[in-house]
Image (cartoon, protein in one colour):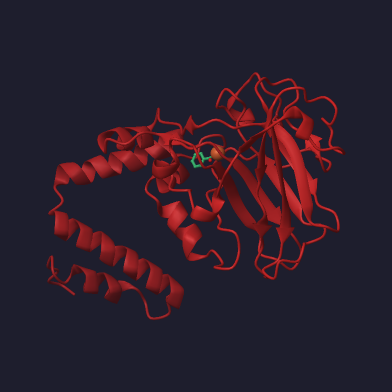
Length: 288
Ligand code: BEZ
Ligand code: FE
């Protein structure tokens, strides 16, 4: 096409893709470019605004590293990561939620009832539940990879004061599918906002806060792996998580209980002398 116009440029783009382009590539690229073109037409995008967008991408690339995934963060705060999660979540299973950049692979084994709190201050939080299939049967041998912030709001990978695997644990459940561990109540925290993504948040009048949560990756042979989180129902940021990770079935009550109610058979049994918090969170996995 020699005469390209603002109205035909999208069709011209499609015609430039060769006939043997992978069909899914044609669909995804075609749709992406159509929406990009429509966006520019609808907003009458100016050169200056276009340059600002390019500068944003360059800014993300400039600080992208093994420890800093600014493009993923951009996708998170724009809601794209969560939307992709929701598009591929199974209706019958526990909702999935954002992975985030702070998971460290290779966490040490945490036995049933094990403690992640160690010397950290604050009330004990006992987290327990059952890993089930969509018929409600326990999934024996499921593996839970657990991670969270320390009471200072930092993950181990962000904090030189913490060990590499502080507040990380890998638990394999037994025949009954049950898990239990003790920890501290995670705190709400801000996503990194000192880069280009922070600039966008500020430009849109948005805050960088996430409600407090425990993260889980749950895996079992024959089942779809699940990346999810559990949130306390009284968290002030539940209704405006900056990365859109909250789903109704992931919000649980953290109940305050007397020390005398602390169960036997856990690592901290007999050592809890103050009221503690308890959260029950069953996790349902969909078949593969
Ligand atoms: C997190 O929950 O760890 C997280 C998720 C998305 C962006 C930043 C942090
Ligand atoms: Fe997190």
